[in-house]
Image 1 (cartoon, rainbow, N blue to C red):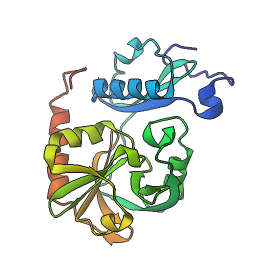
Image 2 (image 1 turned 180 degrees about the vertical axis):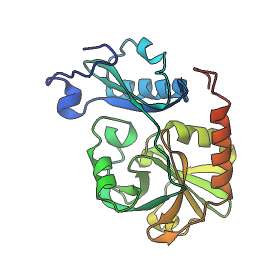
Image 3 (image 1 turned 135 degrees about the horizontal axis):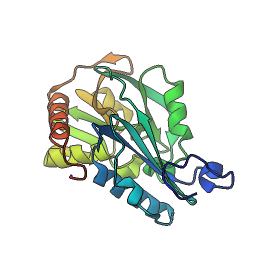
Image 4 (image 1 turned 90 degrees about the horizontal axis):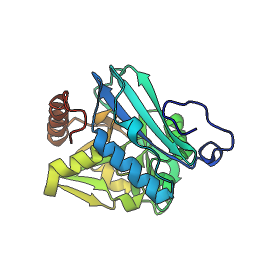
Length: 246
């Protein structure tokens, strides 16, 4: 049960029974997995945090052909991958609202991409927009259901600290490294986002997604969002021929 691309999971697998496992989702364009090395680093770090034994990582080195989403799953019974062909078009901006659900900042499923994903998925399903934002048990801004969140105020960019209950996503990492001193990891309350000038979400499927409507308030894709989004797209296009480069 350790081979990649094996879709048979034993009922005794702890990933199936308890959600005890981790995953990564990669965008593949023209047979090249975007940010493959960073995703592998993230999967390895999450596996170590959960105490999962390191598998044979070699199935992750060759990307599937074409365009699509490549998903990696690691549970105690082994490593599996699944490729979903096609990249559906994305809207110009997302409608986002607050979720009444909460995440526990110290829980594995808040800090890492675990297979125990029900709270995040419930927040997305129950919301009326494209995404939902969740607070932690202390009432601090934590995460979007399936993305990281950034916002700006007076030209300064902010994002929650991972100790608030967000995942250290690959695109989040790119924004932090590109922005340098211009972005601050912080602890914030809902009122902070209500007064934000710009808000955007990040993950490997949507890249950098402007929030066009937040909790009923219309927002423009401001200069920080537009600049970072354009730079991210250019960076991706420059990596078309480099399978494993960062």
